[in-house]
Image (cartoon, rainbow, N blue to C red; front, top):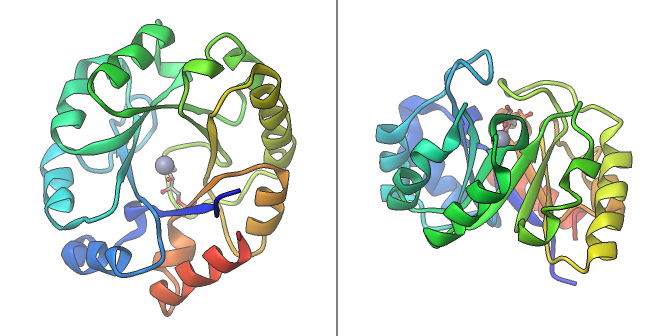
Length: 219
Ligand code: DX5
Ligand code: ZN
């Protein structure tokens, strides 16, 4: 089995030193740059939009894992493809026609991700799991960095892993929210493939070392 991927969330970066922080991720053992796009409607916060992503993309040398926390995300699938997204995740709760959205993401050459809120059952993915490249399990309520990890996530990871195996899918399980060195190992043991970490990385004294630490724990 391949090593667990680590995806630092730039939401917790110092926006006044964005180039420096993107380059820190470039030069670290991280696998993806996690990019949180919030519209102030689907979630009660606005993060950053296309011009900032364009600036990030200019300096980033690892795949861009873009997490859309916006209503009606179909409107922007082509835009995010043009901005260089490798993985584009839409929220289950924000899509009226999820299957169509997934096909549209793939048609633009990106990996198709579906994020689900803590209250959303993994059983709702039963009919689409074979079309999903990455399920982003929210382990906090989306909208803000620095929140506490919701413990029920472990059960969801196990149930999702069982569904993926039952359906013979190749879907990766990504965990987003409140990830630290304390829960990383248990998450991987439960079946996680990608760990997103924002505050734990960027608020630490040595972000590069913190990424290394997560990578080692998650091996
Ligand atoms: C939350 C975002 C997360 C967030 C994670 O809405 O989707 O990606 O940046 O931040 P931490 O690791 O601080 O919980
Ligand atoms: Zn996210």
